[in-house]
Amino acid sequence: VQLQASGGGLVQAGGSLRLSCAASGTIYSNDIIGWFRQAPGKEREYVADISWRNNRKRYADSVKGRFTVSRVNAENTAYLQMNSLKPEDTAFYYCAVNPNGRGYEFWGQGTQVTVSS
Image (cartoon, rainbow, N blue to C red; front, side):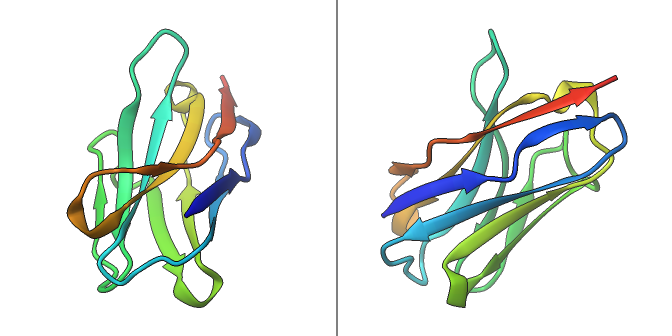
């Protein structure tokens, strides 16, 4: 599976962006699509994930209530709607696939999100 994240950009604090994660190859029903981010000088951190089969969604506490993860199976695409953005959300955002609970094995190239104050 190859993944391509897109939709990043520069936005003012309080604004919104929607990231897309397009997968080429097969996403299986037991797979999970995850979103992660990495800010300069910091470790990569988990943001959210969604189950391809039952649409179960999970979020990091730092984004809960502001970010929404979704997927369109027919498009092989996952989305991350980010609202009420804060400067501390500035990071490179990646999507990844966790196939059948084996851990995240496939990573996209990522997209930059910059939130100005």
